[in-house]
Structures are given as structure tokens and as C-alpha cells.
Length: 413
Image (cartoon, rainbow, N blue to C red; front, side, top):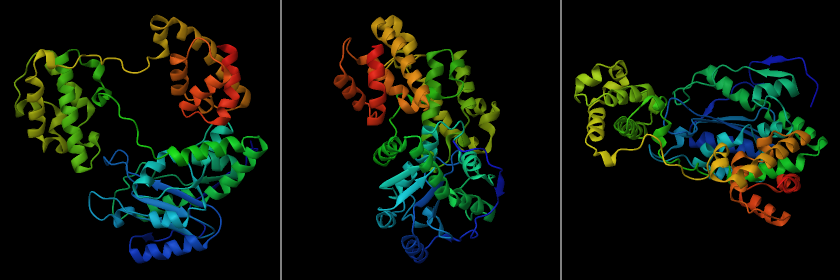
């Protein structure tokens, strides 16, 4: 790692804040500038997490070469409320260029929606992890490697706001101002540490899988905050019914679920059904402060219908308090369910942790927790190197990781 540098505060982009690209003509001009510039393309997105239901990009920042920054408003290019903009032509023109993204796994799903994805990638956050930096957020890394701190004031803003305030645009442009310089420093460090090939394999994996849709969780309503306070199956049915009603409203209105109705309102209402069967009417809702708030009050009929639906369920239709286990259990439960797998876990995991410390990589970047659990739970009692390598490859463990951990795991098997 580089020595600590004195830090200066960067408060504005070197070439000023560009105007927002919102028209076809502006996009054509911006594309021409980006294609004519040289060097890698720095890219970032701003979303509206906590404000909107859809995790889409509300602003895309691009920078290639000195002064060639573009602030692209994808919302202005949406054909209708249900369709996303299509920037595939821009992506195709830049397909031979390396794109630099900080924490690409966070941005790529939103970029995929607008057909703006890289063929070649450098992820500065992931590079920092492979180099074992203790802090890998963008500001910490620019401070550590470049001696520059970025003005960070609007990361939690509602980026679906229109028009976007000038100070927000300044903040957004700063996010791509130093990515190329940061890439250069990190690439040199990766090469010096003998980790550049590791990083390139990780980046190629992200290009291939970074925009994959997330796997759906069974019974997602069970993640409602405060659910542990609900004591009865009837109360659980109330949580499920209210959660599903809120989810449908959130999707239809593109408003974050918690801004329509807080989790606490759902579980507090469910606990009233733990203690009996209250009369389901507007007074029940209005007796609780959460349901009197403006966002929730306009949907009184929806909440009442959801409560009546839960109240009408027969005992056999009620959800159990605890969900039935699916998939591989947590290793803390292995000793009872599969002693052999538990013993193997107790031997192999410490060996993998020790190897991660030896090569100075966070253990989750050497072998993901899911991959380790899957392999150790299902593996045979005896296995050779090629068999273990195949099992790990089936879990999308990259070649550089397998080369390091297969001997270690076999020795502890």
C-alpha cells in the first residue's frame, strides 16, 4: 500500500460541472465527445434508494479524458413510464474501452436496465479489497492513494427529484473525476503485489454476472422488522397480508415501501391480533398513529381489505411462526444434522481463513461464505484435487481462488 498522503479537499470538477444531457441532440453530441476522447471510461450512477421502489438509475455520470464529463439523465429518454431508456448504441461505441466503476456490483443492475454495460471493467472498490485496504469506500481510497478528499454531501439524496439542484450535480460529477487516476494507482499496486491476474479474473466475472437478477427469497415478508414480536400464526397472517398489500402499492406507485407504511405499523397491528380478534374498521386503523400519517391514510381501504383477508383464513391456512428450513442449514446447526459435515467445516474453514491472512485478502474475497457452505455440506467424505476443483468451479469460484484453496482444503479435509 502507498504511504499516507496529506489530504486536500476537492470541491468541484476541474473543468466545471457539465450540463445535464436530456435530449437526443445532446446525447449525440455527448457520445461524439466520449468516443473521440482517449483512455478509460469512468462511470457511476445515482439511484433513489429509500425514496423509490424501482432501483433504477436517475443519473449516470461518465468521464473520459480531461474535461470530457457527461451527466446523463436516463429518465428523459424513457419511452413511457414502464420502459427504460436504451443506451446500447453508446455502450457499443465504447465496448473496446475499459470502464472504471467503484463497487460495480451495486451499479451494474441499474446500468443493465438501460443497456449500458461494459465489455471490459476495472472495479476500484474490488481492487482495494484484493489489496486488503481496511476501508474501500471511494473517499477513503482517494484520500489514501491520491491525497484528495471528495466533497460528499448528497449521497442519500432523492435523485428522482427534478430538476436536480446544481450542488447535487457538482457532487455527482466529482464521483467520476478521479476514478482514472485511482485506477492507475491500484493497477500498479496489484501488479507489484502479484495480484493483477486475480483482479482481472474478478473483473471478467463481474462483466459476465454483475447484472444477473438477484435470487428471490422465499417468504420475503418474513424480513419485516419487528417480526420476532409477533406471537401467533394469526398475527403472522396479518403481517403477510399487510406486507403484500404494501408491496403491490409500492410497485404501482414507485414509492419505497417504508414511505407508504412503516414496518413498525405492520407488526404493531399484527400484535393486536395476537391478543384476540379486534373489530376491523377505520377506527382500528385510526387508533394507531402510523396509519394516520398522510401516506398511509389514503390507502385505508387497502389496509382494511388486507386485514379482513388475514382474519378470514382458516387455522390450516395460517402461516407458521417460523418458516420451514430450505436449502443448506447454517453451519451452527450442522453438528446435529450432519456430524461429518460439521467436523469438516471445523477443520477446513480455519485453514481457508489462515490462507486468506497469508495472501492478505479478506476471506470472503478468497472464498465466499455461500460457496464454502455449499461445498462442505454436500461434498463426499473422500475427494481428490480435480473433484474438489470441479465442485468449487460449480459454485463460480474463480481459477485464482481455486489454485490457492484447493491444496489447503484438501490438507484439512
